Length: 122
Image 1 (cartoon, one colour):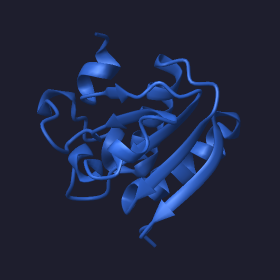
Image 2 (cartoon, helix red, strand yellow):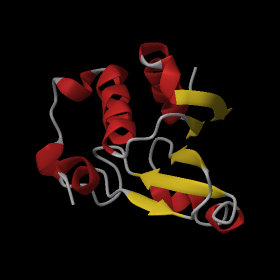
Image 3 (spheres, helix red, strand yellow):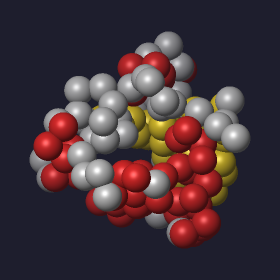
Image 4 (spheres, one colour):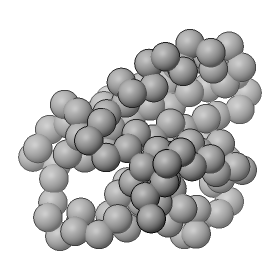
């Protein structure tokens, strides 16, 4: 397991040809998707992760400078997609992760085929 996978508690489920990335919101972790994931794994490759500072992520990975803006989290999302060699994904972002996904998609639009935002932060 590489540093990206370890730092973000990365999990990949399912075996579909298309990839869907589920990004949790503020104050939650990837477990927020536990009731949705069983409905997706037959058709999609599902990527779950925790933002640094959420869930059981190792606090040693938190860098105040990097995470003082949402761009730091967007770069983490891009690193996950690149590490997993995902050429394009459907991104579902809840709360603050919707904004993180929007920033990441502006930086690398080629990595995103669709963006779905749930209760996106203003």
